[in-house]
Image 1 (cartoon, rainbow, N blue to C red):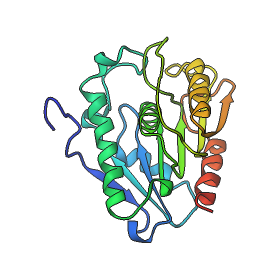
Image 2: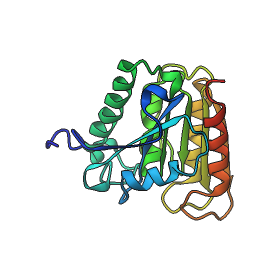
Image 3: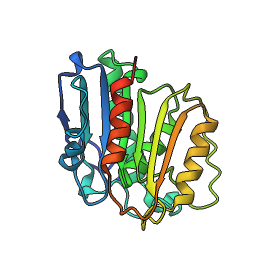
Image 4: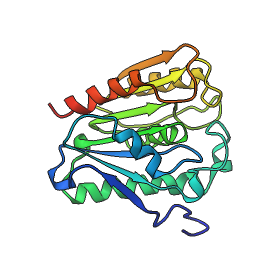
Length: 214
């Protein structure tokens, strides 16, 4: 950890088979105030036995200090540091002969926003992208001028229509952005759902993980 790279050298927890034996490797990003061990609890809900889950830990249990809708500079240098951490994890997987189409990126809440933003800035064919209550980062009116193509990557976006942290408009906007970049988006808005992850959402993503690469 440094003042300019606060998430540097943070621990990464793992669950599942060794990477060399995995069909899919999923990078899982926890929410604000939670930790790597919390998001790995979600990994235990998925049924595919050949998926390895990697969960990095944010410094101070938060990836960036303010709302994902705040002006980007207000979340620096934490946001850029978090994005670099994911990039380094993906690069390390590539060095271990795990291509992007065998890498899933997913998260909950703040981690879901980070997953969306990372994927949008590094668009390519992934195994799965899953955002439980999240969307791309930036204040209202942000142009979101990302480049690249997802080349048919399956994307799940699930959120409540009354989520206190994630405006449904940003989820819909994220779906439009990802669709425009060539992703196959499954967007599900749940009436009156709390800020949580439901069994129905887990089942959808479980099916995506099970079929990825087939």
